[in-house]
Length: 402
Ligand code: PMP
Ligand code: GLU
Image 1: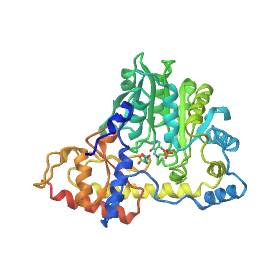
Image 2 (image 1 turned 60 degrees about the vertical axis):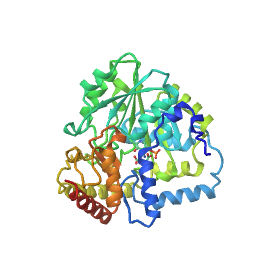
Image 3 (image 1 turned 180 degrees about the vertical axis):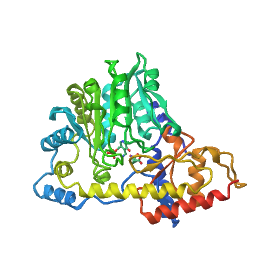
Image 4 (image 1 turned 90 degrees about the vertical axis):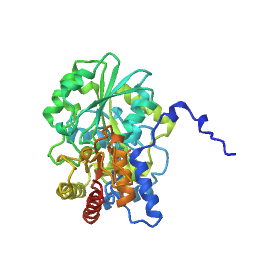
C-alpha cells in the first residue's frame, strides 16, 4: 500500500504554495505535450531572445576564463557597473559594498526576507502583488499584511491606506512598480507621498522591486530610494530578466544599506554562493552597452498592449484598465461569476483560468494567486498572431457561458 510520506515535510514547506505562475506555465506545457495547440500567456517572460551582443559578451567571458566561483556578492566589475547604473539611471547612491548580485531577483528577495524577518514581524504587501512575495515572506517567518487597491484606483495603494496598515510590528513594505501583475506604475509624486509616510517610521524598511524598470510607458522611471527622506530605509531590487530578455540567465541584484548587504551575502554564501561567473561578466558589459534592443522590445510591448486592450474590450463582462508598464493586463472578470455552460460554472478566478485552459487552450493565471480573486493576469509578451488568436478563443469560449 502506498504510504503518504509528505507528512514528513516541514510545516513551513507544507504551508508553502507552489508558484502559481510557474504551475500554470507547466500545465500549458503538459497540454502541449499531449498534442493540444495551447497558447500560453501565463508566464511573465519576454518572448524575445537575449540581444546578440550580450550573448557575445558571455561567449567571450567563457573564452577569457570566467568559469570559476566569483565573490559571493558578485564580480567586482559587475558591482561597479551596477553602482554606476543606479547613479546614472535612478539617481541612487549605492557604493559597491552595498550591492549584492544573486541568482535572479527572486533570490534577492528571499535573501532580504531571510535576513530581516523574525517570527511575528509584519510585511506590508501592496496588493495585487507578485505571487512569490507572499510565500517567501511566510517561509522566512514573517506575517504578510495585504493592503489592497482595486481596479477603480488603478490598483495603486494610497498613502492613507499605507499609514493605516503600519503598527509596531511592521518591519517591511514590498511592492513592484511597474507592477506585476497589474502593469500599474507609481508616478514620481505618488512615490514621494508614500515616502513621506515611510519616513515617519525609522524601523520600517521598503523593498522597491524595479525589475520592470525598462518597460515603463510613462517615460522616466522613478525609484522611491531617490528621495533623501527614505534613502536609508530603501532596498532597491532589480535584475536582468525582463529589460534584457535574460530570464534563463538567473541574474538579479539589489542596492541596500551596508549592514543588510553583508547579511544577504552571508545567507547567499551558505545557500548558493555567487551567481554564475560568465553571465555576471556579460551582465556587467550589458549595463553600459547598447540599449537599442531594450527600446525595441518596449516599443513592441506598447504596441501589443494597445492590441490586447482593444480586443479584450470587445468581450462583454470583462473590464480592463490601461496599464502604464510591464507586459501584463489584469482584467476584472467578476461580472462573469455565476455564469455556466451547463457543465462548468465560473465562480472565481481559478475557475476562469481552468475553464479557459481546458476549453479554449489558452493559459492565463488566476488573479487569486496575486491577491485579487476578481481578476486574471494575461501576459502579452507573445506574438501578435498568438494574442489575436488567444483572445478570440477566450471570446468564443465565454459566449457559451450564460
Ligand atoms: N519580481 C517581479 C515583480 C517579477 O515579476 C519577477 C519574475 N521575473 C521577479 C521579481 C523575479 O525575477 P528573476 O527572474 O530575476 O528571479
Ligand atoms: N515573474 C514571472 C511571472 O510572474 C516569471 C515566473 C516566476 O518567476 O514566478 O510570471
